[in-house]
Image (cartoon, rainbow, N blue to C red):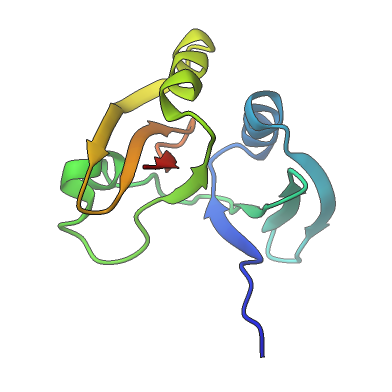
Length: 134
């Protein structure tokens, strides 16, 4: 059997704001939407190669501060970030900065892992990594 990535799920505080942010900055478009009786809103968005399942739950709690920083997030078990491979992480970083997105960690090289990478966060503090293999 072949195992292929399908999507990642994220919980956000404002569904419309997040859909606009992911669409405007990374080309994600809405693929499907549903609202459960509990009030949970679920929207699948796709950029053609990857999908994100975006949840808005009434009265949800914000992401703890420790999970908003790359260095401290590893101290708490669980989901940490999701990553996108890009052709040139330094050029991509310059574009992210020009867009005014929240910078978390500027490009760095990890020779042991064979990557050059950087991090930003979305409006709810969810970490996104961008990397180039070296």
